[in-house]
Length: 214
Image (cartoon, rainbow, N blue to C red; front, side, top):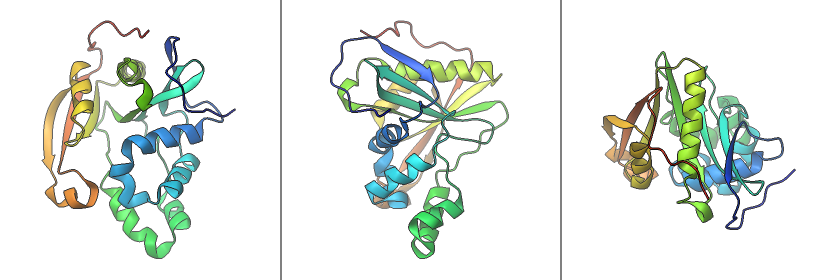
């Protein structure tokens, strides 16, 4: 079963856990659309990057949003040592070659995040541009929060780059607070951002009401 890019849609947005079989490519495309600028130096060219992501997704580490039966958004998370995006060092070297793959591994290592005990780490939110502003991001965050509560986590952690103020504003509305800012000016020329803010939200803290979408 394949998933095409949606039209504007008129039905309710629904959220389900896991990536449906056959939707892996669509998930990878949405993920790349959201994070390709940041991940580009490590995984470009885009077609190879999307193929690599498609082949190395952990389907049980995502919640997905659907509109009129089409996948329109997703949120990944890291729990129990597994995140939405996988792929070992050996897989990177097989896909990109040993010579070109080594420096890519070094770049990918910059994005590695290891949760503290009792933490669930969110691995980014990607929403189809055509339906942004309909509350999809909020629905995804609250479903991830439900996963964290069921897993007896005490807090949710995420990192947001300084060039994505819209995402940070969403996280703040959903109850996240900044706890640390890491300035990385040496990455601005290479990856397009110069600071990363770490944000936490206690499990059990509710964001604003009004999550239903039209």
